[in-house]
Image 1: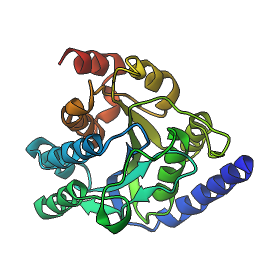
Image 2: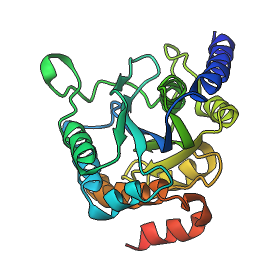
Image 3: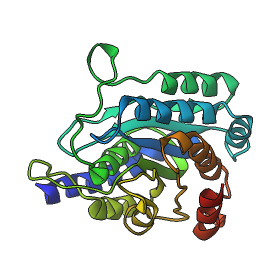
Length: 254
């Protein structure tokens, strides 16, 4: 079943490449893949949303979006948890001016999961990073945009887990699929008492592709600072020119 899923995704990527040749170009196709697994509380979930919304309202990020070759990027939000659980995902937004960027920031800030528009977290099982990346690849392959760069921005507070009922793609295989589609995976590890060295795991096991890097959040309260720093680097056209060790030292010392 896992091999079949991988083959399907490969063929989807080939089809999408041909389809996107006729699509409007954007500077960047970006999936914000956020952790909503069982270890994330409602407060921590909201800190991720609020930090991301605030980042997109930042004048430097707005300027970076408009400064690219096409002056626009395509962005979508996706929440992942255990491989056995469905992903919560948004539509794609094309950000090109103050109005479209503000609309996306407002959308992110109010993004809700669960039934009856209520946040229902803490029951999301294990940490299925690979299945989250696989879903993000599906989103990129079928979004109708043609990005000069394609990036999946993975944020999370733990290492990948695998249970007998979770038969999804693991991150080691998802990275291979991302390479076939020329998609970069960047990481935003959220350090905590249970995973104080999560940055090392993300660096060695999660990120991949041209210019891949991590920015470390020292807890969910630091997420807003980290996601702003990370988005600036992902959006700017020289994103791949700054080496990872400089970014890591900056994240840990500020």
